[in-house]
Image (cartoon, rainbow, N blue to C red; front, side):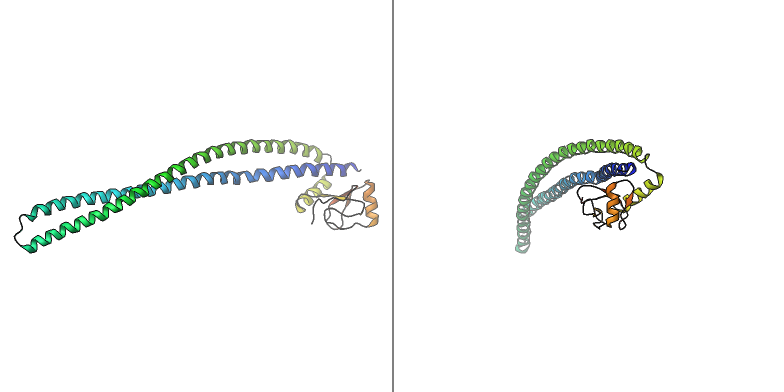
Length: 243
């Protein structure tokens, strides 16, 4: 096989690894954001439950103060009962006392419901805090694993880039420039296999019998007349790509 063609094949293999690794590296920030979102959601849930508890406790204290105020008023009105001079005044005081007692009864019912609601919320808060703790441990481990994977990928890209530079140095600049152009244009496939049936595995178009015969010898560089990829003969047609 032509040495330049062989080098192009090796170069494409290296470029495929570099491209794959770089795509995985580019995906890392998004994966880290997803992990941070999990924590944020857990923290937001805790904040919502805590705010609900605080609001209900505030309402409960307000109602307790209202009951205390009403109790003082009831005592005051009860003390005035012995000093009124008319039945109308007496009835009015009794009505005030009854009204305040009814209000207190309703407030006491509300307080009981609030206390039960707060207890449920505190149980939910404890569960949410425990879940967040587990999530924090998991996210920390996951981030560490991701960082290790990222470092390994970056190191591999660096090593493969050195190999690529060495291979590229063996190729004529004009050929290399065209290879790089096709590689970008054809989504990472600039060199395609051609098998016994004479089909370009890149675009799946048949070569002419003459070109197929010349490609099979491997003595010269040939390019597919349709997709313009460099082509080389292999025993079996491949499914490297299309377009």
